[in-house]
Image (cartoon, rainbow over all chains, first blue to last red; front, side, top):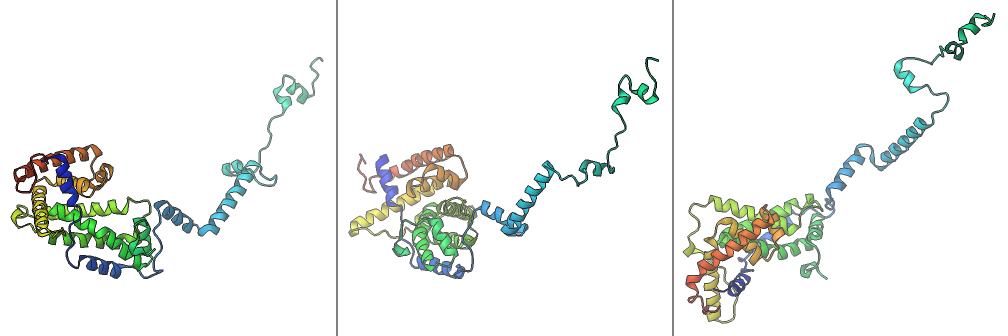
Length: 122
Length: 194
């Protein structure tokens, strides 16, 4: 048997005649299992499902807008904080303010002399 | 164009319409997919009644998954062939000793003339019996490639194997089919050069 003859035989076998009533049974089952019109939404992709779940968790698109606005505001305050705001690093360390305990004069060669009121030359 | 005669609309789009309650989409999908599912199952199982059960079960699974169908999932037809292949595998595993090949009933094929009809019937019976003599994976691959006309990557997806494995399965399957049919060549009306 040649390849061509076998190919032709396989082609002829493509669509056997359907048993009586199979098509109508499948159709009936399909109609019985079919959701009512408007009873379900169209299929969505996994990505759409994931983003939908995330936005739903934070209150929908309005919630997402608020979150974005708050993030931008926080970012700007971090870059350029108002003068009256406490220093975050100090708050974390439990201190209210930094007091300068050194003076330039104390760390220079003449600092102690100046403090003592002595004249180095005399 | 009525959906019943529609050959262009994508299966996935029709499935989406089915999930929205569109009865015309149900009819189109039934007309389009049931013959493929039955044909696949019949050639793999070699038994019309069992193939009918498999076709109904596979289509029922399609209806049930429709509302949950994800648009970026595999093609609808690929998914359905995979379900059908798995259902056939389950049935073949349950069989003990396989079907009695002499009793395989080939659905009647419409052919012009009684003589032509008889020869077509004899060839189809011989092909069905020869297919049943192949190992199951070879049979599935040959049916999907050479009868259903699918491309190798899609068959690989359906059978969950690599493309190279599909090529090997179909090549070995075709050789085995030719060997199984060779002794009946004359009886089936094939000449020496066909």
